Image 1 (cartoon, each protein chain N blue to C red):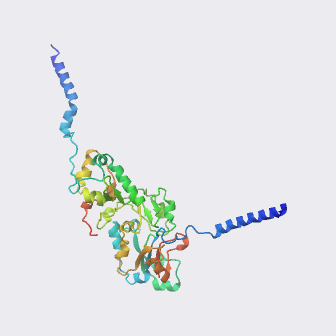
Image 2 (tube, rainbow over the protein chains, first blue to last red):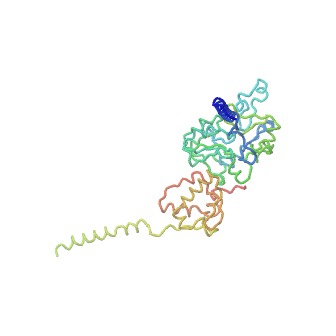
Image 3 (cartoon, chains in turn purple, blue):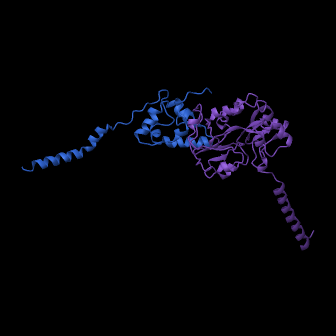
Length: 254
Length: 133
């Protein structure tokens, strides 16, 4: 069969258009690189805090005390200089935009523990000029206190107030010093590290271990069979201001 | 021989100036002997040969630090194949150099090495009561 010049140009044009369209479809509908990877891939540590269990005992400070003891967190009375890893905050301040008149009436004044959200897209990491804070492959937003120059950009960037600055030597304010974990020094920013030093030894975070009501559950968010994923499937959960696009790894069961 | 006195004075001055370092050292009680260090009692060998540790322990500690904090390298395999936990407080001080004052500090003082600021944050385990794990 003989092909005319006109037919040849038609076929060539259609083929080119087809290839172009395929490329466009691939780009628009393709896999999102930020989406959770298939099982067997990297972990993403996450935490689930049960508000119902937690608010049953408002005076309980077990998780706070365990964290303080494990990480040499100073107890500084002046609020403007305090250092916080995990601390209690009033419900209406933790979830300011997720309220109705009735939830406000029901839960006002109730406290729940808050800590660094170990964001999937951490603002603090983007602004750190010395790479003293970075996101590990397991999702933990880690700090290298050796490298922190105390510029406090990360504190300005963090929308959750999870970072604290050491305005003075913290050692005089530490109740019982432990040699298992370093203290920090004047001029350094610090925050919750999801107990990475305990995870390295196969232990769960100190707050999880200390909670007598088992209100705090810890696990791998990328593992569908993990307890945290089971809880997130079974119960309704919220994050702190997720509309900022930070992707917190700490979830609250309501 | 009328200039006997000036010569004697000059000689005396010369000899005293030449021997000044000796007098000064004797008066300041400095000696050429190095610091007397208290060696670890429980362990016989360090993570690297003594000569290397003496000259380059600071480099090794920096490598340990970078590895442990930034690259998750928490175990160190020594030159003789023995494995150690990378931890300044627990491994170096806790298991070996339990007497920081008479080992680390004494030599640093002798060599007039100010700092280092490791101990502004890291805690000497013997200085605190051991916490039950």
